[in-house]
Length: 317
Image (cartoon, rainbow, N blue to C red; front, side, top):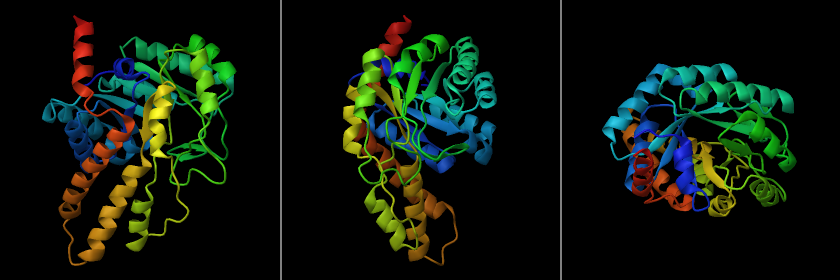
C-alpha cells in the first residue's frame, strides 16, 4: 500500500520515527521490504537522483509498483531524496512517487523559498507531498556537497514553511552525509531541534545523514580487505529522543551500503572460486532484511503498520 509521508507522519508524530531507506537495485528492494514486513513497520523507500541514473528511473519505478503487489502487507511511501527542481517535476509527473524532497538549501534563503514554492504547488496539485530543507549537512550526498555544517536557523522556519507550504522540513542539527560523521565534541544539536519544534508545533521534521555506521560492520569490512578508517556515525539510541522532539523521518543510507560491502567482501574472500552473483545476493537480501528489522526497533516503528493502515483507511471513509 503506497501512501504519502504526510499520512505516515500524522500517526508517528511525537511517538516514533519512520525509517527512510535509500535503495539502488533489486537486492536492496527485496531485503528492504522483507525486513519491514517482518517487523510490521511503516517505512519510506528513498530513490535518489543518483539511484535513478544507476538503475534507471523506469526500472526503479516498476520495482516499486511490483513490490506493492508482492508485499501486500507493506505500508510505505515512495520518496525522491535530495531532488533538484527538474528531478522533482519529473517524479511528480511519473505517477509513482507519493513524496518528493526539493533540496534548494545551497541557494540563498529567498531563492530556496522560490524554488521550493514552485515544487510544492506542482506536487500538491497531484496529491503529492513535499519535504524541503533549511541549513546544510556537511559531507557529500549524490550531487549535494557541503564542506561545513550550516545549522538550521530556528528564526527562519516559520516564515519558510508559511511561504512555501512544504509538508515537512529537513533540519541541519549536526548529522552529516557519509560514513565519517562526527569528530571531537561534535554532537546532535537538540537545542536547535527543540527551538524549531517550539516554533512549529506538530510540524513533521526530518533528520538526514543518520546512519550509525556500526563499528562491527566497519571492522569486518576492513578484515576482509577494506580500508575504511575513522568512520563514525550517529548514536542510534538517540533516535527516539529526536522523535520526541518532532522528528518523524530519519534517513539511513550509508549503513545499507556497509552491509552490502561486508557481505560481498567476506563472501569472495572465503569462496574465491565462486562467480555467481546470485550467491552473495541471497546472503545480502537476508542480511539487509535483518538490518532493517533491527533499525526499526531502534526507531520505535515496529508493529505500527496495522495501526497506521487502519488510521489511513478510517480517514478516507
